[in-house]
Length: 376
Image (cartoon, rainbow, N blue to C red; front, top):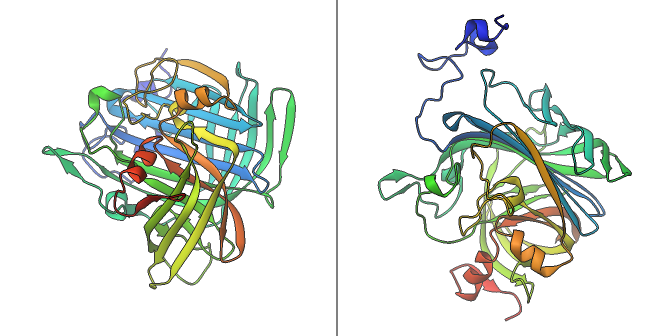
């Protein structure tokens, strides 16, 4: 018997609305590039830096697959739950295995849940935006970022970002954490377009070897999200303004050569310079290769070598690593989010530095313009 959706295939529920942008149904991408994607990303961290949660969900229509992950880091345990399924007919379906994202109010509130899985990690969270989400073309926001390499489109993606508060519960291996919105904050983004790394090495465009260094940190009266300052919801100032991180003096672990902190000087649109100091909190690092991001050496997940968009079918997997072991950290590193205690002008916050390890160390050692070793 035909279901409500399959009976109208290739139409889906959103095709009833007057929002079409082409002569195709909404589920069909406007490009045939296999690297086409649409992705959500959330983080949550408490003021003490004791817990660190990262959630992601991506859709890859031209590869006919969808995936999601949840990474939780606490007391040297790094636990990941991954889920996969075919894209299916309903592109609005944001449930992948036990991972579910639900828009309660656009640009205001989400519900994020993780159900039963083998790693004994569950959560039921309410996310509320604190910053105004502003659309931008990401390639134009990133300095020195090529958009065409060897006559191929390398990066053509767009989207928006925000900071927010998080409340609810996390259950982890027999322990329950209650998250209070006054003490737990995070960051999120929603990006789409064409991204290198989708589909793994077979779809990778050759690009200069290097690493970005993303700053995601929210202070009381201002914030840094990558190369932009975001403003509070309801503030009279509209839009977002550009920020230029022009000097990076960084410190690395002597064994792993992974980032552990540093000082970044940022020039605001007004011309004012803000010097921001980052200090990693213990081993609170989310290793995103575990969430299917491709590392600088072309590797995907540490065990299966899966990448975003890999044809896995419908399955759920996961693992827990002891990240107190330097050998473990070196094996799973490659695209990493470092939870840091951040200070600027006497104010302290909790934020994230994102980079490729150990590529960033190699850049500093080679004295790439704007990058140097802090201890030299």
